[in-house]
Length: 260
Image (cartoon, rainbow, N blue to C red; front, top):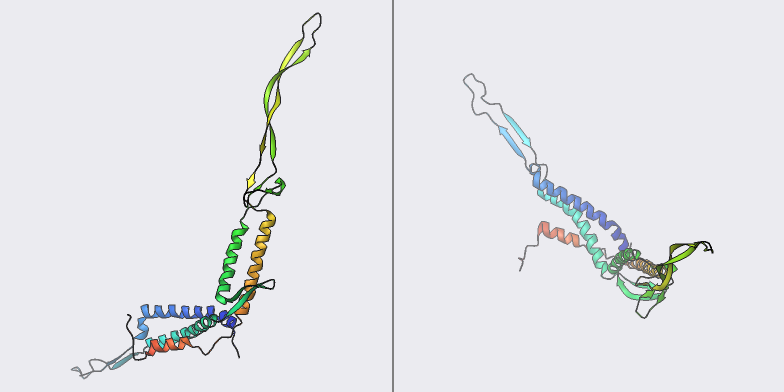
């Protein structure tokens, strides 16, 4: 039965966890439980009788068997290492040939993308989307229009009048031939100018932001589909890197080279 890459990817983490736990337990045993590797046998034999014909010491024996051996512990550990390394090696060998085209709307954007690249692309696009989600957008009520500056827009002009206070008089009591009139002063705001403000912005519109996020989403879905196709590559299950490593460490091959 043919094994596919996605099948060994599904079990790799669990194998690594099992090996990691076994390694921690073995290290703890080697470091602080050395009594498990030790045993003894004590035999007490009387050599002579005392003056009353009794034995000076009683014959006795005490046996404490060895509970563990280093070789046995290492063999147990390397059984887990072998399985973990076999899957790791088979995954990496298959990744050398696991490829797929990155296709969007029927168009091939990138040919023969390695599966590992597609996985990294998904992660990076996800991070990029979080960045783009934080982009602020223009207030569409301000009527933005393009300018001669690239990616700069201007809002509809906003005009405000400039006023100053002018003192005026108004008649309180009309004058007559018998008495003068009475007048009161008051202040009036008189327009003396106008001020026009034109806001500029380097932000993008809500529609542009929506389109940007949509294109990232399309690319993320395309990368995921391509990775799934690439992970359908057949695994060379005859590649047994773990067994070779285990045998060399435990048994050697008769020649250990020194580091240059």
